[in-house]
Structures are given as C-alpha cells and as structure tokens.
Image (cartoon, rainbow, N blue to C red):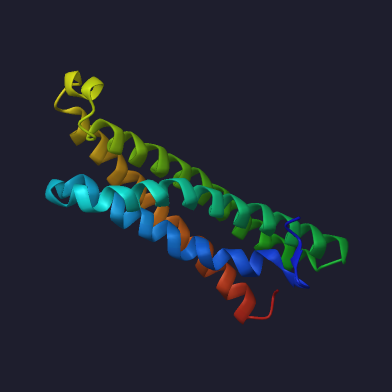
Length: 160
C-alpha cells in the first residue's frame, strides 16, 4: 500500500505534506496558546491540523520503511542503508513528537472551549498545556528539520 503510487515511491509523494503540515501545526498551536484573542479564529485550523498531521506523518514514516525495505531487497550498499536507517530514526522521533503535539493541542482546545464541564477546571491548566505545546512544537520543528535535511542530503548526494 505504501510502496508505490503510479510507479513512484509513495514516500517521495507524501513526505512533502509532512514537511509542510508539522511546522504549520506547531506554529498555529503555539499561536493558539499564547494569543488568546485569536483563539476563536484559529481553533478550527488547529483542530484540523491536529487530526490530519499525525496521520500524514505516520503515512510518511510507513512509506519510508517500505522504501527502505525495497532498497534492502535490491542489495543496496550497507553505507547507504546506514544513512537511510539514521533518517528513519529521525522520522520515528518526528512521528512521536507530532502525535504528542497533536494530543496536547487538542487538549488545549478542549480546555479553552468554554464548555460547561471545562469551567470547573483549574485556571492554570491552559497555561501548563500551552507550555507543553510550546515544548513539543520546538521538538517537532527540530525533528522535521533533521529528518528532512538528512533525506535531502541523501537524495542530492546520490545515496538514494
């Protein structure tokens, strides 16, 4: 399922969506947390990104593992496979930071929603969740950079 789309490696096609959506989720989630007056206008975008981005990141990770398996089956050189494995490790970390960021963003949306059940929650909870969102956003952006940079270097240096 993740190997090819119309003859092209699936990873090549879907990875670009992750490269765009992860930083977008990070930036909008942080903005939602630190700029309360923008919340009514941004909440829907954060919610959509918090659901969509982990899915896209997971598909990118799975398709990358499929591509790695194809290259391994074709007898790819061990040095190249080692670089691909390092890239894959960055991608796995990115996936977990993205999932964490999405969950924290959704919790922040819920806590700040104004629903009757959320009115009894402690006032400090949105601040704590905003802090968690900021930390996870930084890690997600760092890992999307590390993952993308390592993949791009492999492509442009002819390793893949």
